[in-house]
Length: 196
Image (cartoon, rainbow, N blue to C red; front, side, top):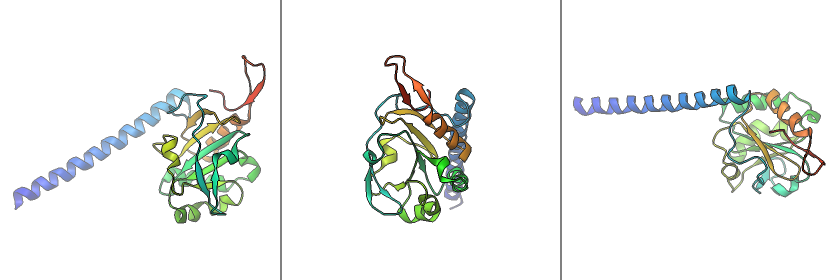
C-alpha cells in the first residue's frame, strides 16, 4: 500500500511541475512579445490584411442573434474576454469607468456562458455592443488561444493586428490606432485602421 501511495504522490508532483512549467513558458512568451513589439502586442494567427472571419453571436442585452455583418463599414476592436480571467476582470473594471464616447468602435465578445457574462458585463452592455458566443465558437474562428485578446479590424472587415491588452489604457490605445487614417501608397486613398 505504501509503495503505490508513494507512486501516486510522485505522479501528482510531476503533474504539478508540468503545469508550472507550462504556465512559466506562457508568461515568458508573453514577456518576449512585449519586449519585441511593445506593450499589448502579440503575434498574429492571421496575416495583416486577411479577411476577418464572419460570425454570429448573441447580444448580451437583447439576447438577439446578430451577425458580424451588422458591424461592417467602420473599424472595430473585437475584444475577447472571459469572466474567469484575472486580467480580463481588470480590463472590464477599467472599461466600465470610461465614458461611452471613448469606447467607440469597441465590440466585446464574452466567451463564457450568458449568465456569467451578464454578471460581469451588464453595466458595460448599456454603452457598447457586448456579445456572447451562443452556440458558436467565435474565439476558435479567430484562433484566440488566451484572453484578453483584441483583434483590430478595419472598415472593410480585414484584420489589422492582434493584441493582448493588459489594461483599459491598452484598449484605448488600440482604439485610437484603429481610428487613425493610413494613406495607402497603392490607391492614394485614406483607409482606417491600426498601422502594422
